Image (cartoon, rainbow, N blue to C red; front, side, top):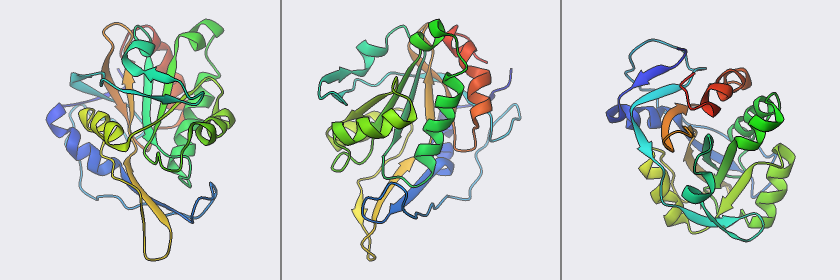
Length: 225
């Protein structure tokens, strides 16, 4: 097994490690940004590096989350992903680096799957900046990543509550003294198994496309990599 093990009691510490404050200059997807990270270390057992997933000792339930997809239709996260291996990520389209890199890594890995495996995988991106990420703009951004990815937007409080239930910290976007929009969000990818629809694995910022490529077949089979 390639994954580290972590107690759910330590998820908050991992969240601090994975937290990024992303700034962009008023809405340009390619704008300059900065990321601030807590330097504390999470206590994990079983070894492993930052480019590996981490398995939770007690998996998370899927959050009751109904938002709007990129077609403008209601999307019930629990119902739409039931029985499917699912990767869930909270981020925003104006993020200058971490969000597009993370989704690109998943897209590269998904492209190596068989057609049947690809149809069985659900990748869901929930915006943490719903004021700017409309269904239309979110759809265009995800189309460039992978047209099979699902993008969701809606009420920020609803998004924040769902993220918090999974140990992912997000805060409302705000404008700093330089006029830049700053959005603080956890950078974890949360992986749910199809066998029980629970989150068993989290992937943090250091995870590469190669890690997802290695792990996705096992997750699709309902197994820990």
